[in-house]
Length: 208
Image (cartoon, rainbow, N blue to C red; front, side, top):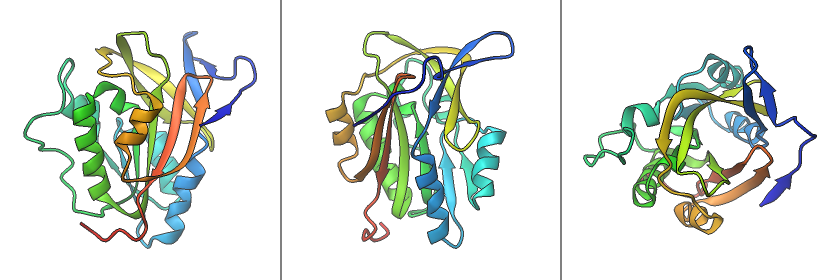
C-alpha cells in the first residue's frame, strides 16, 4: 500500500453552492487508458452512473464505454445482490477494463466474491479493475457517491441524495482475498479517505 500525501485542502473541492466534495488524484487511470494500445477495439465497463466527463475521457483514449449503474439497478437499499444473478449479461472476455469505484463497500462479502468472479469472467486476459474502498471503519451509513473524472489524475466524488448502510468495512487482507484470482498492479492510500487498487487478470488466462 502506497501512501500519497496531498497538499493541505487539495483533497476537497468547493462546489457551486459552497459544498465541500472529496477529490482524489487516482493514479491508476493512466495505466487503464494505456490498455487501449493493446486492443483493436478497447472496451470499458463503468459500474457507476453514466457521466459525460467519464465517457468523454475514455472515449478520447479510444474506448467504447458500457454503463451499468450497479448500485441503483442491482443493489436495492438494505439488500444484497439479487439472488437470481440476472445482471451483467455480457459475453466472456468482453472488456479491457472495469471501473468498480466503491460499490463493493455496499455489498456483503459473499455477494462481493460472486461479483468479482463474474468480473473476472468478463475481462479479457490482461484486463484490469479499478476499485476504491473507504478507509473509515466506524460509520454505519455511507453516502452514495458518483465519481467524476475532472482531468488526467483527479476524480471528484459528488454525493447523491441517498444514504445506504455500508454492508462491510473491508480490511486490506479481505480485499486481497476478494481479488485472489488477480494480480495486484498498484495500490494507494489517499487523504481523501479512499484506498485505490488496480487489479489485473492474468494475460495467459484463456477465455472462460
